Length: 181
Image 1 (cartoon, rainbow, N blue to C red):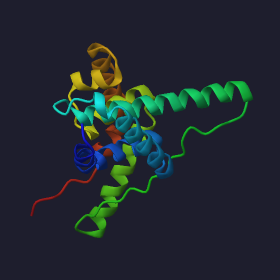
Image 2 (image 1 turned 135 degrees about the vertical axis):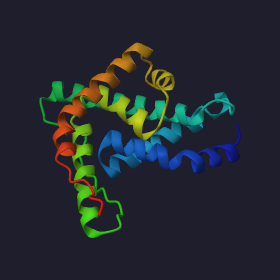
Image 3 (image 1 turned 180 degrees about the vertical axis):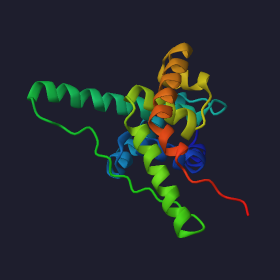
């Protein structure tokens, strides 16, 4: 691998990987740190990487492993020191443009509710949901990234969907529908 290929990868996959890091950590500064650490690992292993392989998938798995290790270290410190350490504060500011102020407000409120419901999932399910829906990774690739059996990935996705359905059911049943005139 060359530095030119690395630059192409960063240009091609950088935004998506950073977005995934942001979802994992829940905070911009922590996401930036995880994003940089991810690329540092990729640079260290540049000679071993196969350019024909799925680089995005590899980078996502590196980010996930680094984040899990960080969570373990915090949990260990918390047990040893007995302090309340925050693994990540949710400091997102989510906004999307919509044609009208009313639609924008409704859209943001729905999006907030969905994001909140996803954030409330157990982290093991949340990772699968993020990889499947946000990163649009196929189930087999998610199994490779997480190092889990395919059946476990399917099971976690099923249970996450079930939980999200229960939490969001009321939101979409009471949503006003567009009336045709």
